Length: 352
Image (cartoon, rainbow, N blue to C red; front, top):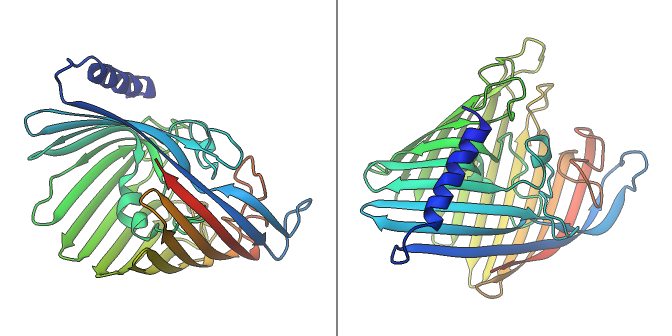
């Protein structure tokens, strides 16, 4: 299977939705979200040519998209989504993290998928999508509002994939996904498999996921992770642990573990939140996050569409604090060095 064939399938299904008769129950909805922050940043020692501190604007994952929903079939819903990243600070259509640049291109869609869901048989999602491992393991602690949300993980966020999810059976849901991890860089197209289980009962949700990485090469780390979420009134508690399973004999500090503890409390229009994360130090190339990280934040939901937020972020080792006006993944302190990096950020999110 190759990218052109999958793109052709997606295009054909989208064209089919567009040509449905006028009486068909087709609903097309554009949407967007402006998310921007002003931040004061400092590190112990920046890269050569960079200041140790700065104040600047940074995008916090703005996006524009459209969804098309067709539910005129008995027990079957079809949903198509196309969503583009918008770097509002630099006025460009691009992913502000620049993670996408190493895959297919930094201005490619964040999401471009079609989901077919049946009441009794589950759902099949094809295209560029949020991945099963991330959704199960990392998403439960990815609840901050600034650019620095979601960094303390080893998970990949979005890729091309074909994903099947079972219907919920007594609170248990299973997912299997074939993923294009490398954009055919020495591998076949859908080179990586992800498997996930989620079990929800009352206010408790448990997650378990495994990634069998790049079967064709055999030397990249696999991943395994677990998560827990508990909600009680205005309180929300979440935790995750994930381990990289090293496949290379050249790695000395193999199988590193990452864990996160998150808590938040919401009352009236306010939410206060805090998280601690730790990633074991290692020479494993897949270990993006290492060292300690702290994050605290306050959200104020001014209206249904407008949220104001303030956050503090700390990283022991450099990985998430970028140079000002970055044009690539470019940490302010040299990558993975002791940086004691700190950020104070205030910003807004406006959904439309």
